[in-house]
Image (cartoon, rainbow, N blue to C red; front, side):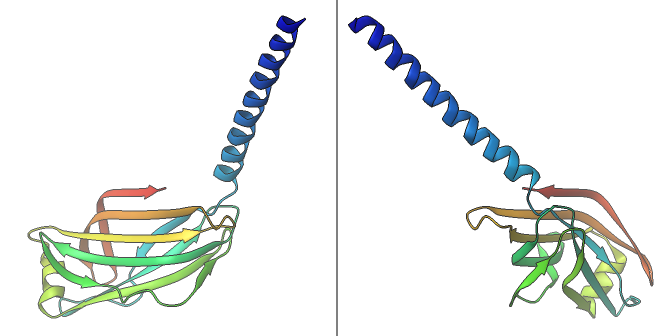
Length: 166
């Protein structure tokens, strides 16, 4: 009789462990499919010239939940030199599912703007946004890293683009 009770106990514990594991996997799948997912799109709102370049950013939520932005940064660099950076993020920004919101732009003037236009050595654009969804413990981020090449007063190219969502 003791052997049968031990086998029942063993299989009960095995069933309990398997059920816990399945519940954890189900939760992970649910959170992966029901979360915000922001994309970063740079654009020129105003015409650029060798004396001034302003890059604006649009955040688009491709996810199914509202994204609450917690952190934002954008910079342009040439080698190790910082040419321009966005103002520090302050306040609250929510991006609803399938909606777009503007993030803080940055502007390069004078010699920094000339460096962006000349692009020798190459100029790189880096932008990152941190955000949360409905789960306060889950933090997400999107990063954009690309070579920026101004091609005209209202046009630019992004080359070597890396867009990473975590």
